[in-house]
Length: 193
Image 1 (cartoon, one colour):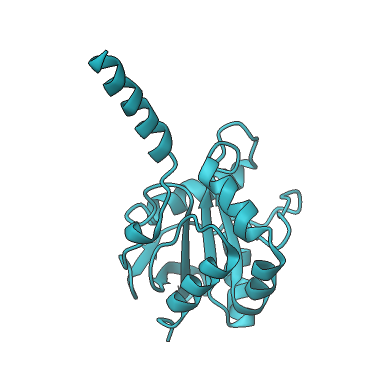
Image 2 (tube, one colour; image 1 turned 180 degrees about the vertical axis):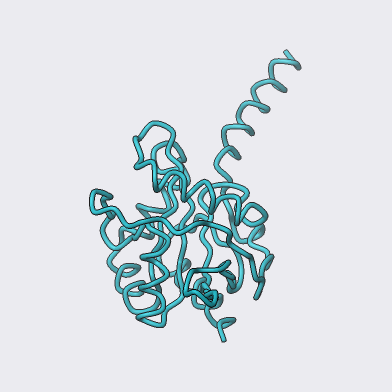
């Protein structure tokens, strides 16, 4: 009987913590003003790649929009077809009018999806795998949301050198409502110079 209880509690713990629920206690400031070097190669824009509403999925398009609008990037690392906490965050925060209005005024939305069952464009899949390596010290579970700017250096011939990614504030995860999420994001944006 004792062994059965341990087994049941172990399984429940594994299921509960499987998608990394980042509550307020685990939201430590881990990357305030940290600069990460991105070695990702330029991904050619493909007109067949479908954008998801206001969320961009192409790194270079995100960079260009961020520079053009002088806004930081809010990146959502998600497992859209398998991660329960990711689905909850989308429904509780990202799909709300409150968040959409705030985001359109303050950030460029970037979705980095790591689906298990949903087919993904091979170019975006490769790009996301490379970006996962770039952020490997910060993205330890899903969902993970980061706010950052990209500083791009060009070589003498005009080609892209390595990008420097400057992260603002703390890593974010699931939050139960848009106001909590926006308040945390606003606190992170205060770190932006």
